[in-house]
Length: 157
Image (cartoon, rainbow, N blue to C red):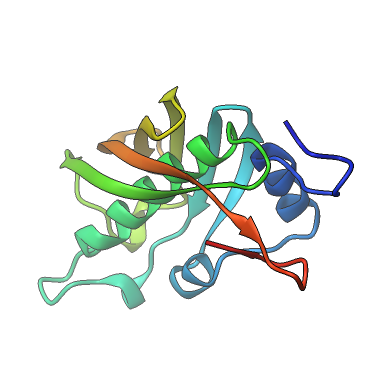
């Protein structure tokens, strides 16, 4: 829950504020994907891979899909956190089922928080191409921790 007396927002409120302000994380800007939907415990990211994320073999680098899936898992967990709580990925397992290319269209990564505890969280995500075909899946284990607000009002880990 948010600590309204101090103005701190819980994870879901932070994410809704990001969407309302059309803000993206620097990684999302760099790779051209964005958060498009947020509910408690469930999020969706979209991106359109192009040649800038190709590997030397001429297809989208697996790191692109892994980054989308990691983001979906992490932000799904973040949507369930109380104010002044953060997370970081401890483990990410990705299964690649179908390659991506610039012809894949707009891809969608859907993340779901499976279990969020005081210290550890578990999440899963799927990545579908523009035609709705399943391209990759992931499971993630995340560390959950307290974030101390700084004297400037910005949160620091």
